[in-house]
Amino acid sequence: MIEIKGIEKKFGSLEVLKGFDLSLSRGKITAVLGPNGSGKTTLIKSILGLVVPTVGEIRFQGQTIFNDWKYRKEVGYLPQIARFPENLKVKELFKLIEDIREAQGNPEGLIHSFGLEDFLNKKLRFLSGGTRQKVNLVLTFMFDCPLYILDEPTSGLDPIALIRLKDLIKEKKNKGITFLVTTHIMSLVEEISDELIFLLEGQVYFKGTYVEMLNAEKEENLERAIANILEKEHAKDS
Amino acid sequence: MLKILKYSFFDLIRSRWSIIYFFFYFVTGMVLLYLSNDVSKAVASLMNVTFILTPLIGTIFGVMNFYNSREFIELLLAQPVPRKNIFLGMFLGISTSLSLSLFLGMGLPFLIFGTFGSDQIMSLVFLLISGIFLTFIFTALAFYIALVNENRLKGFGLAILIWLFMAFIYDGVFLLLLIFLQEYPIEKFAIAMSLFNPVDLSRILIMLKLDISALMGYTGAVFNKFFGNNSGMLISIAALIIWSAVPVFLILKKSAKKDF
Image 1 (cartoon, rainbow over the protein chains, first blue to last red):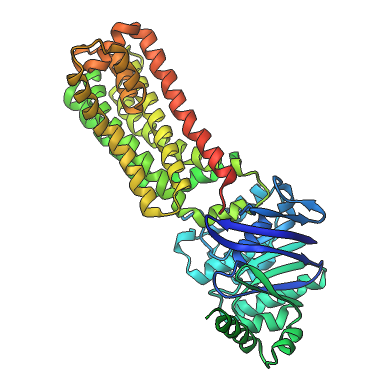
Image 2: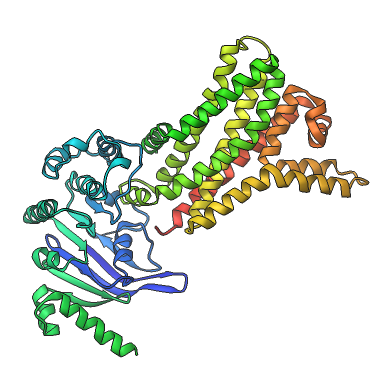
């Protein structure tokens, strides 16, 4: 579904992505992990065309994404920070994104399952952080896309919403939808991901399944495995 | 682009600040008209307020709106729309909603006063045109500055500095230069200098229209002498159009390449 070749990105003298290849296969949930500043967000933004790589190529369903915008019809993106125009009402925001995407969304079921019925006529500036994140989720999932890119999808969610979100992801996955997810919540990775990519200092340090990662690091849970990797790298540096 | 323009416009027009901005012009216009009972005088006084305030409000709204929408812009960029539509739509949304506040706020008092239908209405029309030009120009400049500067404080400071420079400092420097160079024929230089400041240009435009030679100042008088009233006005309008187009062009150029 996505082919990345030799991707490099520099911001001034800062090298965020240091040239790696990566491919995402259809119908899988891939989790991107890594410490802060390892290049997770830059990778996601490169796929979305928000960031233009210094070197390298990104292909989506066989087509290069550079200088193209139409491929984003096929991509649903959940941004990390849910901030919207303050004076719009929730339902106006849904309408706005429908208008912009020139597609009919299906927000009703999602509005119900995240309990947003009472907020539809409220202005976005009066919403709490968690509620805004729910709005964010509805905005993303109300369109049917073959690929969803979720940046920290769980931030600010209460347990019920979290369960609904996991169910939603699993349900979509069963329909053959591809996911790319970044998160710091290891239990989420364990529960939903088919494959994980561990980024470290702009390189892919590990790519494989959850179990493979535990075996490689000889640890019994993901948190420890990651701590292990980071300590090893730290020892190498000093 | 029109969709983004529409929503950006409605988001802003419903904000408290647009309404305050409207009332400010409305009250000022009413007071000036009824106190002076003279349309020309009211326009001249309103002009002084407009030429300071319009660029300031355009600057502040341009910068603030961009920085406040930073995350939303990222969401929009991830949608299937070309980049230029997003930035053009947002910029036009802000500037048209500010222009509407200005247009209604300043136009209504004159409507109530009963100026419409008289000859004097044209001076108000020219004031409105130049106010709208200034709104577009300074919003675009501020938008561009915000686009270039990731650091909000720096962007805000720079945008305010440009407003300060155009609205106040430029005139002072200009005057000093004129005094130093008074022994030379500097008409052409003076004309060139005023073309580089949209606030000056608008002032000249109104002065030429009102034909108040006492208020024209040096550049106004030179413009008048050099081009005559009509072509002077045409030239200043042409320069204002260029002033509006250049920052928009810069916004499009910068936004096409920027990483978000």
